[in-house]
Image (cartoon, helix red, strand yellow):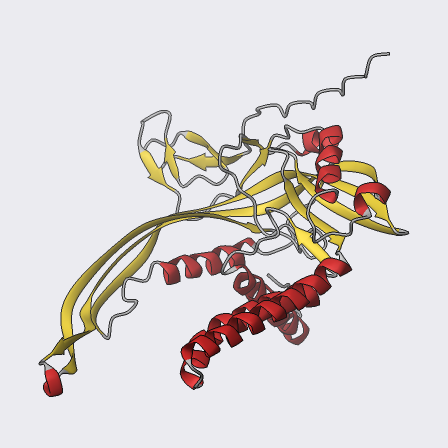
Length: 364
């Protein structure tokens, strides 16, 4: 009896993106059909390049899924049976159940930051010798130029349930968003966060990272600006795979594009947690007492090795304290600035809600 081959996933048709109609060329008066999200338009009649002062909507793209439900279940099954930090019974008793495809929205913010700064930088040097040896501090005139490109993704909805903080679009095939086709493939979730707030917060984060005056004691001149700012909504496919273990339901997310584990949550191994705590304490005590004995006692060696010993103890304590639930996956690793953007969105929502109660206006 031969094993049935799973049906291939249907491809998303490469349709043309949505267009904004009703615009005319200021040079020749010809009608223009501009794709949403574009800023530079070429008139098809007089071939004049035009700049759109306000954004004509937001470009919406989708990523084609390349992994079927069977492979997604296999990825979750392999993950449950790997690693010492997860419960050892998962390999035998976990039952992988249903899997459904979902398209989660993410904001893709792209920008180039150009900056220039003139100022003084503080430096130190050692002069003299013997008893007259001393350290001097002096300032040096410096100039700095910065040119950096940023391309990052941020969740467009509350990811507390999903756990995926960001996605990697490197090498992915992007196609125009078609809601009717995506609905036939799986569940499509709309964005719930403000595009303007996320874009503004992301640009502020980009400028902070590209700041040319960082480290200067005195700044005489500073220029920093962002160029070619682009905001796109990306609908990314993820397989939601549910499994049961110990009379409880869990779920894991599998990247439907490359088949990697996007986010997974599983019960931890209590024996592993206890061993990590005891082992780190034993190692630090053994190494610390040995070094002190070899050094002849005193507080000097203890202070020297105190910092690495505390770091090892903290690592073991975290494995014991937070090892009850194991969270892994490519999208579970937080990037710098995500919490800042999320907090700014929450503050904006609270402020708009208060204004709405005061004046009866619409938020956002």
